[in-house]
Image 1 (spheres, rainbow, N blue to C red):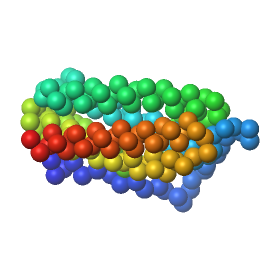
Image 2 (cartoon, helix red, strand yellow; image 1 turned 120 degrees about the horizontal axis):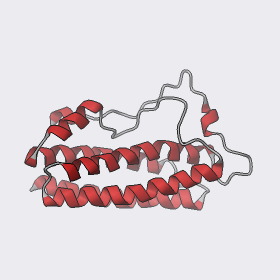
Image 3 (cartoon, rainbow, N blue to C red; image 1 turned 30 degrees about the vertical axis):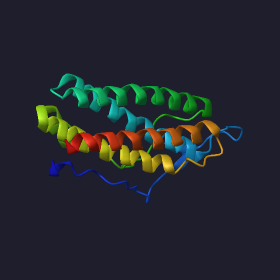
Image 4 (tube, rainbow, N blue to C red; image 1 turned 135 degrees about the vertical axis):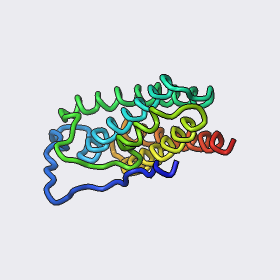
Length: 174
């Protein structure tokens, strides 16, 4: 469990080209809105992937249920953000590397895939809690967006994932 230390949010600002965040002048999405979607889509995709690992592994019924709930919910949100990027005429991918809070490393994913039973549950829950905390931090950056859809999704992410964190902490305490 101690090996589940997760990467921090850092950016290599020395050579960043922000043209990948640029939106047309008549776009209803700001550059910050676009960057949020470009970062949150792969972040959410990893949560969906973690859910798939739980479905294929030996998780307890409670962990399996929360993993499925998270994967279903975040798949819908990914589709919503992809539509924003399409509407903004922006790429889904950024042209520079940016580490995001809560993302599990390949080693951590491999450890999770190999785990069974209580060890799996522990690794999944601790990893997903940290993953959610990272998503909440990113959502807080755009919760005051001038775009109503972006602000509403950010607020929903904060509310939903805070609630899921509380539930996952209860499962950890058992």
